[in-house]
Length: 257
Image: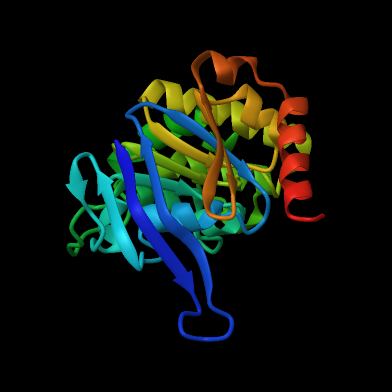
């Protein structure tokens, strides 16, 4: 379970450009929930993910994970429990290293750094089996530099690598935004399969309203650092893209646009 309790976050505090993004923000995500998060630019979507992952700190409030207060826990320690995929496929992989080397690094996440070979040959067949599930032919390209792969291949690899170790939470920050529509659909299908098979608690920021409607068990719409809409169960199943567009228009009118 993830919880944000009474979170306050300011940018540029004490200056003429001071901005309060979150003011007494609260959110609970139950174990196993797949939450799709939408909202206009600047609504706080990515900042919320960064707070959960520890990339940015809170000015006030707490972050709880599985009943423990992790507000002051270092970012790298949180990633023992969290897998994250970014919008830019380049951020989840190392382009100058091979697929095999990238997977070896991901396979050793949270393990102690001792003097040993970087790649365990005994794990190669396991890596091939994982890659074969992607149906992209990458199982035959273990010695290929990741930088030479297409954006979709790299994003599929990044998604796979983020969940190789037994993480409990998956954080997706517009992970299909940089892909063409066909490849984005493939990545979403892969995402849904991995989430279901591994029973991951998932938070996915997306600007694709179709994905927000079709995927996940819960839908959040954010606006100015607050939850404007929170749907789950039958409400989530029955929501339509036109309904979400109407909500966006309502927000726009309230903001004077």
